[in-house]
Each structure stands twice: as C-alpha cells, then as structure tokens.
Length: 255
Image 1 (cartoon, rainbow, N blue to C red):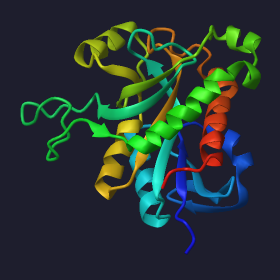
Image 2 (image 1 turned 90 degrees about the horizontal axis):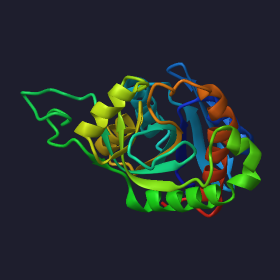
Image 3 (image 1 turned 180 degrees about the horizontal axis):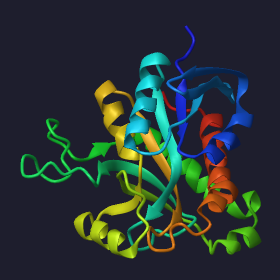
Image 4 (image 1 turned 135 degrees about the horizontal axis):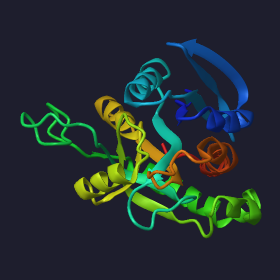
C-alpha cells in the first residue's frame, strides 16, 4: 500500500513557487478555487497548496487536504510578526501551541476559548515540531551560504535564532506598536502573531491529524511591519522555507 502524503501548506505565493521545483511527477488538481499539487520530494509523497490568507480560507484548505487527499500530517509555513522580546526579523519560530487571539465569546465563555470545546490552546505534534525545529536550526546555521551575509544585512539580519513556543493567530494584520503591546499584555507567552496557524490547529484537532506550524519572522508587528514585506518573503522567507522543508523531507518525514 502506498504511503499517505504529507501536506505542505504555504501562506504566500512566493513560498509555494519556491517549493514547486522540488516536486517530482507533479499532478495538479483544482478544488474550491485552489490548485493542489501532488508528487514526491526526496521520495516522500506530498501535496503542496496555497492556503489563502486568514482563518476561514486556511480552514477550507486544511479540511480539503484531510478529506479529499487523506494527508497523514500537515505542515504550515509562512511569515509572522515577532511579539516577544528577543524574537527578531530573520528568526524562525516553530509552534508548540496555537491560539486565536481574536476569539472572544465572553461572557458566555472565557476570552480566547473556542466555544463548546473547553480549550483555547491547541498543541502541535511534538515529534513533527521537533523534526522541523532541527531542520530550521540547520537552515539558520547556514544562512550565509543560502542567502549571503551582505543580503541578510540588507534586512538587518545577523545571527538568526530558532524559537519554540506559542504562536497566536487572528484575522487582522498586526501593524502597529499599540496593537502589539495589547497582545503582549494579554498573551505574554506569545512569540509571534500571524493570520492562519490556529485555524489549521483547530481543523487538525477535529480530524485527529498531526500538524505543525513554521514561521519566519518578517517584522516586529509594529508600525514598520509593511516595509519591504513582499521583498522579504521573496528573498528571505521563501529560501528558508525551501531549505527547511527539503532538509526535513530528505531526512524522512515522521509518520
């Protein structure tokens, strides 16, 4: 029996375009206005797809992957804004937990809790996150070779770090110091903020499917968050994503 595929879900076109050349025996299927690209990378069966931006689009994508393609695990890649002190541009954050920072059904339910579930935090698959974290560390250790020290310097990136912990998601691009400060006050453990990961987490929890979320820090989620955002994704984040995913798959994605 052939192995079930791994899903690699990208938030941005640039990341998907970086991964597609790795795909062998490519076959594409269009469902719900999304192109799902099937094939193998280093002998591992995979499905590559663009999620769309925001929690609803991402949930639709995740459910299609699990229901229509029977993926055995799901990895979400993208960029995020750094929240916690010490999480800087060019760092990589591997989620251990995810939470929706804009979920608030109080006073019926506690703030951040998903109604009728009794939980606000969703844990990733520990083995999957550990394997991706190790691949991410190997990537940042050779960032100079992958990208070039001068080019990294253009974005103010020095010695990049890999962080593990809480990532929070919401349907709003956080681009002000005031909003970031409010998030830090409410969720002091949050390392980074983005717009999709917690939706993946909830959908995968419903299906009982292992998942992980991997983010490159593109900004500090402040008033400068929009500066060179697209260039950063094309020239830094997409290269990181390709290197990390290829390293992880080449070493054998855990079942």
